[in-house]
Amino acid sequence: MNAEPNRDIKVWDPALRLFHWSLAGSFLVAYFTEDDWKTLHVNAGYLIGILIALRLVWGFMGPRHARFSDFVRSPGEVLAYAKDAVRFRAPRYVGHNPAAGVMVVALLICLTLTVLTGIALYGTTDFAGPLAGLWRGEYAADVLEEIHEAGANLTLFLVVLHLGGVVFTSLEQGENLVKAMITGRKKGIAQ
Image 1 (cartoon, rainbow, N blue to C red):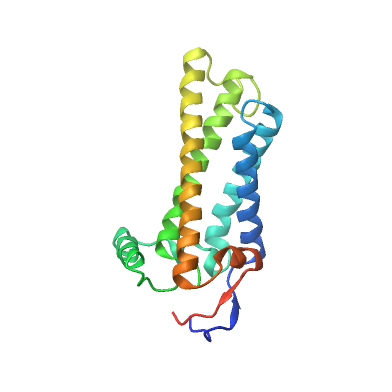
Image 2: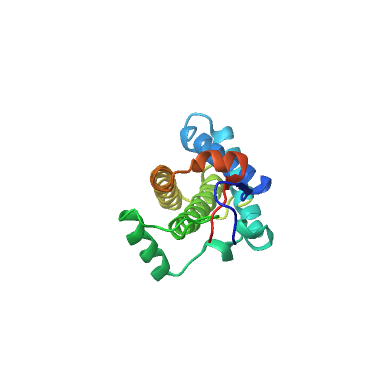
């Protein structure tokens, strides 16, 4: 895509931006209400699951820069991009760069694991939700809880890496990527 440099162009569609910020907010609510407000925690988890399902659909049917085919790259391309980035020579991308593409996929996988184990745990310990009574016993609950908490903590770690990547890339490329995810617009880039 060729675009005039310094001219704002539409990149992130409203649905993608709404997904992004809703997912971020839902994860924070779910993470910090773990034991104290179970109903809020469970509902935030269900919302995360719905958002992931919608994002998967949007990843195949949405506009260009929302599609997985636009940003999921081979391991070699990701490694080459990462090497260039640490040398401050990474090319600019209109949409997600290869490292960001890996992060999107990693977050979706990790969140999916966390949601599924959360639903299973809820069904095991509270006999509620769509998997109520599927597993029984303290051992099943302990295993599900360990996996669920590990998934949530890994997701938090990935979020911190994601935020670091956003700050790094914003500074390296001279563009406010947070603002771009709010407005949907980025500076035009020859690509």
